[in-house]
Image (tube, rainbow, N blue to C red; front, top):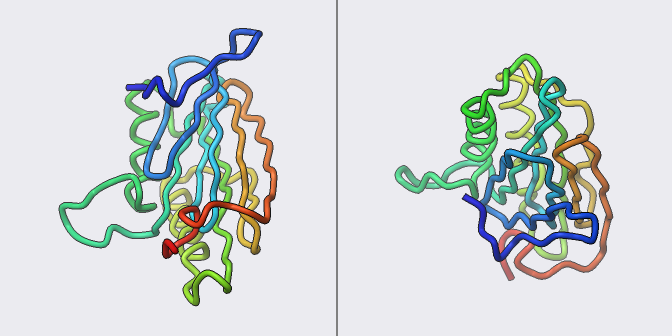
Length: 171
């Protein structure tokens, strides 16, 4: 289900959707999805045959406690994105992935959660035999990611200033 508060349309009628952390979006038509990551990671998956895609945004690599299964965790969000696409009829052999985010700001935290987030995304995609066709990960800058689900085109804007809650642990 689409949270209409996160949707808008431009003059050409294209739908734009802002993806918040802990969410996954697999639209049934072409949509431009955007999100902002700090230490979090977004995985964009595209079916090159159906020419449609989906995206997630997670902030932590692993589920912290049993029973707390949410898409805030990479080990849940990546698998769930793949399964959602398969339920919509996409074949795994036609899927390709792109990974974005996972920055580290030593002035915000001594922990490098970003690196762990990148690693879990890669590990699951490799295990699921989904090729990773591009990445823009790591570093010290946050990112605004804009993904066109109908073409697999991605724009990444690196930014110095993000809200504190785009970094883990939250300030």
